[in-house]
Image (cartoon, rainbow, N blue to C red; front, side):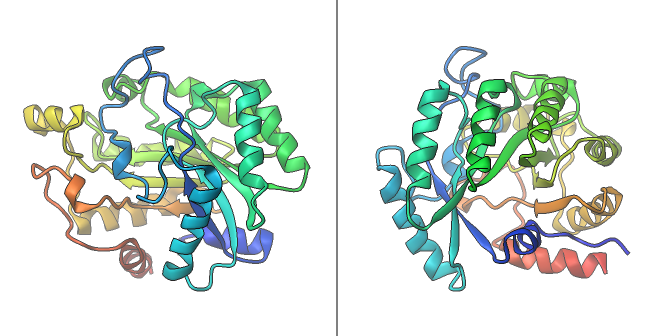
Length: 298
């Protein structure tokens, strides 16, 4: 029987406790937003829909961390150890000295034991990865989270990603070579991808030296280019019902290497951001979904 290896379990095995991520916004952008590769970002993206309200780039990092810890102390009463999660946009998209300063500021907080750096595969190089390795060598926890989204170049081009899958493979391999823990993010339901195409991605993921993966079902966000495309070419999208997605994920996880941990298998977006064009799963929280998936797998 396939089992769901939770990334929380990875933390417990390696560090002896649950590590709670505290999201911080350090004011980064992306190369497909600032004109370097494009403008407007990926067609599915509205960053405000994906991170908590307490973190905004106008607040100092220490203030964001303090407010985040307070938030999680109420939500997860047993959380005692924290890591700063540089999440919004591409958090290696700056000169290495600027990155060094930002990471050091977060790590100087007395309750922060490490960092999670969310970024794009085309926003890392040897110098930046060496910096992250040096932070780990100094005894801090470092996790690199790559938004890969799809293994198919045709899909990446269609969603305006600005890099190909070969770029992602190179970044993942260079990160693994430095002994850094990494998590790869993928979206299921992107336009032009059939169920069989999505299912086949499991074997591609198995070939990557990743520690963990994070999966989201495609959620159509109000005001994005994806919403317009969904309205005009709905036939190109595979729309998962909740039951179908649970079946799909139970099967997909069973195809993954047993040593790969699952950070998330579904996404949550506040209802006010969701397009009325897409049928919603309702107000089912992630912990409920997780319990349903475990039962389905069993």
